[in-house]
Image (cartoon, rainbow, N blue to C red; front, side, top):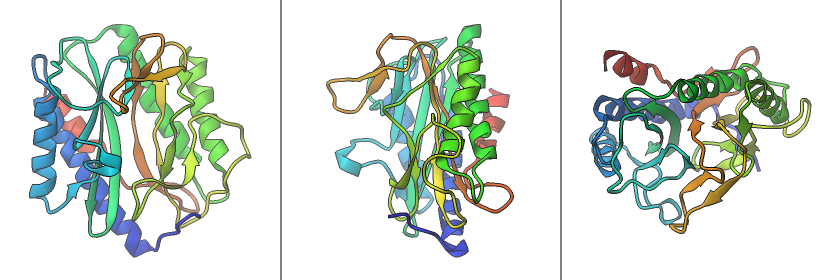
Length: 258
């Protein structure tokens, strides 16, 4: 069942989601060649708790960390640990927070130092595909419209959309209805209505869309070993234009300075 939110509840989701953006900015501040992914996770957890919230992912279905940190061919759900980041890596960092009874959720793909031109373009087009999807996330449209816009855009550029993982509703629970696939047909799927809050999160592969899961039970990687990028925003469905509740502005300010 879809949970519709009041304006007051949407404000609380926005507060949690903005905290995610600020947390990812703290990650952006220290991400560099030579750092271990567990170090990024520690900084994120400390920042979230210092701001009166708790990590939204830690303990969810027994997930062991604050962040999901996925490097290069890892698509999502990479577990932070002793892995060291190197010049030329791309790192998708997904973060959730829980505060005042509501979740926030967002993801951003970082370049570690200089990355190859084709990987840089993958990141740019994945980010753009997110905004293509957001542009049609308005009252009266359907989730298939979102998926169509994302899929149509990235496939024109030669990329593929992961099928096995999708976006979702957000609120009192981290994963709510409806599912929001990043592929689809116009005019199909759940009708979007005011009061719905959804996460749109294209996971776009440089090669084929097929993925496999590591033995750790969490990490999902591309089957062909080519890189993948992932960006995610939380949006509230409105009449004329989706209201984006999360933000990349804090992250991008740090990235520009690095």
